[in-house]
Amino acid sequence: MSPLYLYYSLFLFSIIASVFIVVRKIVSEHNHSKKQMHIALQKAKEFSVVSEAQNNNGENISEEVNGKNGERRKKSSSFHQKTVEKKALSSELQREINQLLKKADTFLAQKEYEEAEKTLIQLLSYDQKNKEALLKISEVYLSLESYSRAIFFLDQYAEYHGENAVFVSNYGLAHFYKKDFETAIQYYSKAIDLDSSNHVRYANLGEVFFILENYSDSVKCYIEALRLAPRNIEYHRHIADGFRLNNAFSEAKKWYERILKISPYDQATQKELEKLKALGF
Image (cartoon, rainbow, N blue to C red; front, top):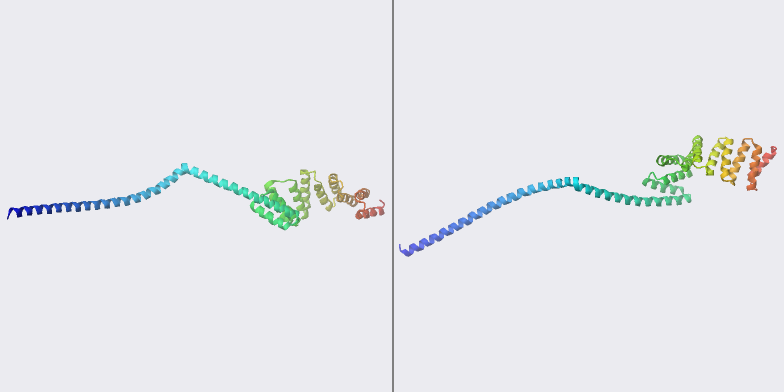
């Protein structure tokens, strides 16, 4: 074997050996990288699961913290917002109620009682304790001769707002129309105690006594009413009739004559005077 051939063989072997070493190293590094990548991916997966759990815990913890610290601010803010909304709604509702009250007053002035009733029922669906609406609807039912309904709403009024002169007067009137005269007398008397400056209250009580044929008390009530309304002919007439029916004919004549001074051509009064004249008075 020539020296030159031996040199080339050794040179070739060294190259092949170098290539083998390089390839082996590359393969080893590739396998190591692949293994590392697999470990990294596995860890990433595990981290993702743990991270998600931690995030959930974090949310719960955050909620707990908010419950102790921030939640108070949240709740306070929410409560404030709701309060503002409620006030805004209340204000808007109050405007609607005021409009309905005005509408009801218009219907009442026009004696459109059924329309007034619908309007007031709508109002009371918003505010069942509304003071004005409860009184107005009781007056509507008095006008519609639905006295039991009037009493129902008056009872509601008394429950929420107590008694006043208007309430007791209307309450007495409703019971008067139901022919519950005992209750009517009780509440008409209360109305006078609460407001003795209104002649109608005396006249109402006088009318009950007149129906019950208690003419003495009836006359007393109408005299008080007349003191406050001196030219009311109907009050004069009730007094004159009361004396006549109580057989106090001389007093009756005086009161009939007073009527003629106010209304000289009152034919009903003239006829009563003629009857008394025929009796010798």
